[in-house]
Length: 252
Image (cartoon, rainbow, N blue to C red; front, side, top):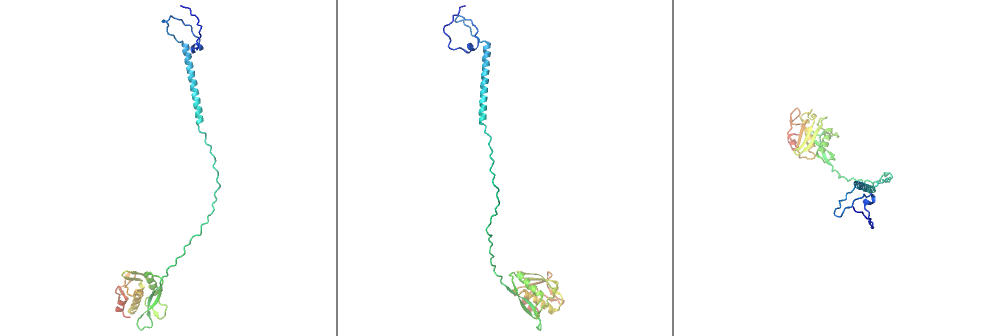
């Protein structure tokens, strides 16, 4: 074995192994027969410890840096500013303009009609019908005839006239229809009197009913039933009745 002479030249860099850990003495072999260098276990253990420590430090630094960045990126809690308190609103009554009251439109005046109520003349030697005018303020035919018959059933106000229609007779209904004037009277209309009285009261009804339309037909019923015979003597009443038919069949 040859003796090794110390080299005058110093290595410019020391390896990690030679600087930090003691280097074991190795044997030198002739060139071409040099064996492979084996790394001691202690060196390997040291290197592993360094790697672990270095990795841990790097991981800690990375975690700390990420945590700081996360904290800096957190949004600061919003500060809730109290909303200004508005003063209470006082309801001030608003004066509305004066309501426009529509002026009443003048209604067209209703033309008065004049109808006639028929009585019997006291001074005549025989039965004679006399007319007494009645003013009407309605244009409805049914209402007009109703007003006329109410005056007829109340009796005359003049002493020169009288009525053969018995007291207590009531008007049950009066209507104007397409076939003529329909009159419905109560049962009292047929009570008492002879043939002259029956003829007079029948004439009063027919002429009063046709005072607005002299040519109209008149249909007379008692308690809702058509009048066919009037009085105990059997005065036959042909329906419908007219003024001309009455004058031809009944002599006053």
